[in-house]
Amino acid sequence: MSGQAGIKLLSFTGKMKILHLSWMAFFITFVVWFNHAPLLAVIGDSLGLSASEIKTLLILNVALTIPARVIIGMLTDKYGPRLVYALVLALCAIPCFMFALADTFEQAAIARFLLGFIGAGFVIGIRMVSEWFPANELGTAEGIYGGWGNFGSAAGAMSLPTIALLFGGEDGWRYAIGLSGLLSLVFSVIWYINVTDTPKGSTYFKPKQTGAMEVTSINDFWLLLVMKLPMYGALTLLTWKLSPEGVSLLSEQTSLLAYIALALLFVFEVKQTYKVNSHVFKTPVPEIHQYKFKQVAVLNILYFATFGSELAVISMLPLFFADVFELDMVYAGLLASLYAFMNLMSRPGGGYISDKFGRKKTLLILTAGLAAGYLTMSAIDSSWPLFLAVLAAMACSFFVQAGEGAVFAAVPLIKRRLTGQIAGMTGAYGNVGAVVYLTVLSMVSYQTFFLVIAATAVVGFITLLFMEEPKGSMTEVREDGTVELISVT
Image (cartoon, rainbow, N blue to C red):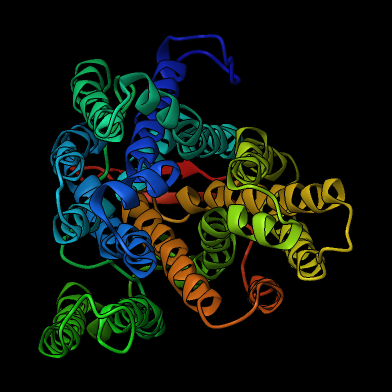
């Protein structure tokens, strides 16, 4: 650990330097990932897109993030966050430039699909921050990382339209989007030069095998396979959405091929998971080296409800305010951005409360608040005073984002060498949630949409009762065979 105790936000040395650079990297990935959202109307006019094509771009933008978060989690555990974040920032600048130069819907769609990969950057910093901060500060540090980084989407929404106007003309939006890609490219170099994977003298623990997540008991092996199903379900749902039954971006043949590919990929993943974990069927893992996968499963479900609903609500809230209160889109967009604004305080707040009062208790309270918040939002109609509706949305977003902070206060305390993969899976569940909620939204009224989210929060609350409060320490083995105990309380 670096020498200084506590979290000193104005410091830029030691672990605080790593925290600041980490949230900046994450911030940039979110600016790039959502750089199209505030410019959609202009992009639509410029490329002559229909309403369903614009909606398709929104879906494509989050599609690849589900598998990407799992893959990036594995790569981070194996190669370390320094190298992996630098590569993600540099390589994702390419589809960003492709989007800025697109002339047709197809070109824009391919670029947006590939840009889903940058949404996986989040996972890398979770592992980085967990290497530098002790357990009693970890929730707050991860909350600052998540909340300030997440703010990138709101910052992009505020600044990119202005930048587009400054360049002016038909192609202003292209310059704005191109600049965000350039920012990503430049920062990849700044990041690589300025960080190290661990404080001096610490060991970076890597998984024993890569290719699938390690588990430490037979029951956990089956639970891991069950928890993979919703991720494939979401990708199947996306394929259906893009097929002739949905928005007809894919032909019937291509859709069929995509379904077959997903089925084969699942079979391959089951084989890989067995290959990595076959030893648990032969000899039990000594108790000191075990971890409980149910902890991961519970956090996955909670992140489905928290981050999943945040992604879905951020993309529909401007439209919701505009429709219900008959506002013009610019004003509705500004009011809706208050929901994302809450991230700056709420997510670090959730992490801080979690550090102070315990992981499980905090999550129970925040999940109950989340269910109540969305239940309230389902009651909003045009008879409500506008300020009360905005207040309800902001209160709801506090519980959503503090809940995200509390989830990731617990993620790094399960098994150190698997932190990237656990964060990857939990993060992917957030995107699975977004896909499910946005699909629900395309079929039902706003009221029902909010009720569905409230119901999933109740399911999350029930599963939480099975979670155990992290206590004692995690055990990792150094390369020389000695054992290190990492405190989790």
